[in-house]
Length: 86
Image (cartoon, rainbow, N blue to C red; front, side, top):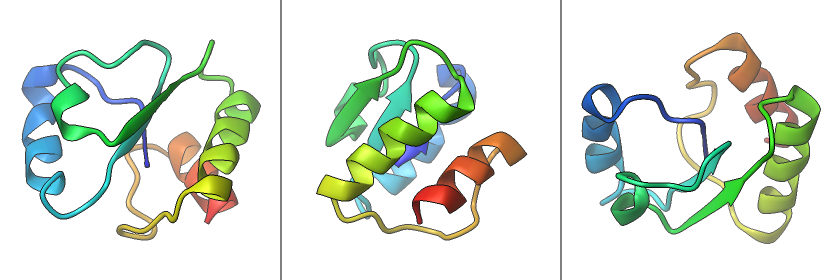
């Protein structure tokens, strides 16, 4: 699960390197664009409010096995969401 992405020119290489090895589900405030070929699913949330994102992440985790690299996060806010779901 990835929460938010960022500009394509700075993030696509990460998606391209992860997608062959991991199932990626994106949680973001907009529908995926360039990210779509790398995803197995996506969830659009209205805002980046921590509780809203946490609820979306928990819902995904309840129905999908989540694995990856524990503790890897781009910011402390996203790290807090990842820890609360793990």
